[in-house]
Image 1: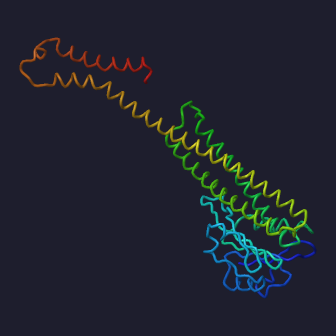
Image 2: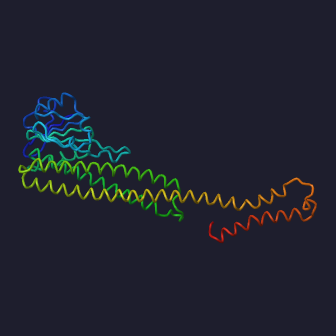
Image 3: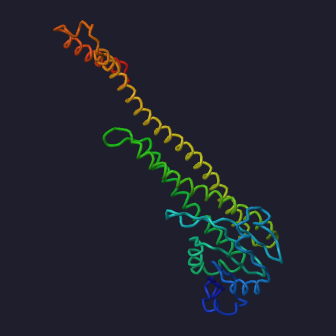
Length: 325
């Protein structure tokens, strides 16, 4: 799918009519989402570049993510999307500045690519250059990343309270609840790791963009890029904090699960210890020998029964005294 944006009455607006025909010279931003070969060819002809393929966008080397080629500046980073679903995604997005135009190439649906055009349309005179549109788009990506981190942080706080809190009855959460916490914690960690990857790529893009536009951008754009770089750094620090918190919670929840399992094993071990002496006595008097004096005694049966009961009660009382039960 192709979207073409132009500056109309001082605002960034979409030109849907130009998307199915020849691209106009007035196009300032071309957004390609899972494009067809024809859309790629038309875009390359207008910008005078060769767009990277999807396989090239997936490469992780720094030299393959930010570089100059054919007079254009190519920048690729990972952007997180679908974080509200059970299958959050992090896919590569390429930004190309060439011939005073911006090209974005992607194969996913990050929310900033829909929210930024709507916001830019209401802000006349603010996004009038390709560099400015790129900075505004990166700002929207960073703002969205911050929102995701805030939600992940809140979820981790809830998990912490559930893991170390008490149920209404005053008992600790059981193993099934702890296992469910582990699943939720794993999902939060997955999103956090994807955000970290995105922030690393965004930081690289901002550094490259600042160097590439040295001496060209306005003071406002320079100030905006510096602010974005500081925001990315602060978000990266917060992501590091969340990662350490997730590691602590993971260790703590696994420890609680082990404690619950040890409690079960402890109960079984105590039960075995309690019933072992009565079983031994019963086995002793269950031997079929003729020369056993107790077999012919009137007090043999009650004495054996009392010994069996007493041998079970005494260990139980001992365990209670030692507070093992």
